[in-house]
Length: 172
Image (cartoon, rainbow, N blue to C red):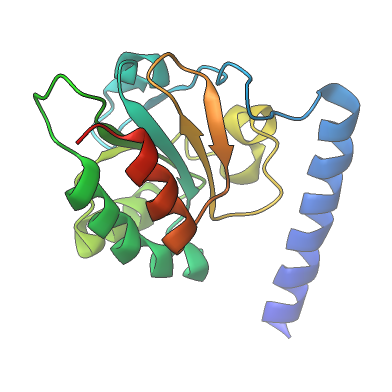
């Protein structure tokens, strides 16, 4: 019964957020400049999305409580290993993971358990995060691919589609 109440509450929250978002902003789309994000890492260091310019950046919206997000992380680790080449002059893949967690300890445990080596940030505000509103998230996992100049070049690609897309965009 508790799970049903939680699910109903979550659905109501999503409805409210979607209604508020539709009144406030136009949707992000391919070709737009990626809206800036600047959030703290688990250690409190502020890291901005723009600090990664010059690279192809996968903005990964996820949370430790999201089963599909957790299931996707091993695939992201493979892609990161394949396309991240620190110190090269060609475009490099960076992942900028934005967590919609509300509990820091759960977020930190998930990062450690999954062995995620890329940038992790969160304001720990769950769905009320200003980033969730700015990027108009309807659900997670969700991702945005940004080119080296900061423009959105793809939305919500996963698995083989994401790998094929990155193979054409990231320097070898």
